[in-house]
Image 1 (cartoon, rainbow, N blue to C red):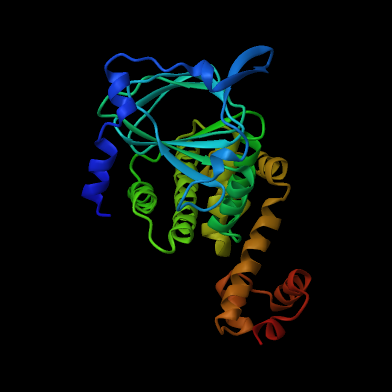
Image 2 (tube, rainbow, N blue to C red):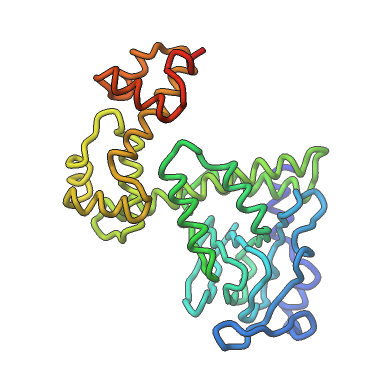
Length: 330
């Protein structure tokens, strides 16, 4: 399927959308039950497991276009949902907060997070991706760099944020990749290829990786602007360590973010569980191991990552990898 055909398919009014446009109201009572969230009754839509099966999609993921001209009352699900605005805008109320998603933005809603969607206009296209929690976790683990302190921190933060009926908004309106990955997934949905589920799985992992990059960039910008909370500051400092590990100091990093060295290291210890020195050593050793695997000598690897004392490098490397650099290289 070409993109022009995809655009036509998404824009075409379905039979139900034509009916909604003509004034028909959907009776939500026929497909929902009520549950209590914090003492208040809320509609519950969908059944466990049912939402995760769709022809041509990997098990654990579905993608459906939201009907236009039909408001969805406040409700919860048994599954994680990713709302993506393909075109136009989408006003929503999430956990009592009114927000409006713009083109190419994504909203992650945890199971049991109360939310309502306003009626979409003819030029508004929103896709809903339903994801099982286990599928989301596996995809995140495959999407993010295992060596990046920022990625590990954001992964833990995201899981923490969504563990208690939470939501995360991804400001990725300027990302070209988010739109391209979504378009390719939709093409596989509407015109499946023989290896469609595997292709969609890889695309979804790339989609998540780009979401997390957008999330990180927003936090780092907040830290740089001096109007950031602890999460943004910690993310910014971890990014600084990832970039400058070969020649950085606690004082230099703290100055970069307008913090005192004591406060900077206290933030890292509280939110990551490691000191500045531990994080730098960890990043240096990981990079040294990468260089050794690429054929570098122990001396060249140590120098490249900022070690001047070879005895110290050998000791730290052995502590982490259980062997000498030369043995690791072989």
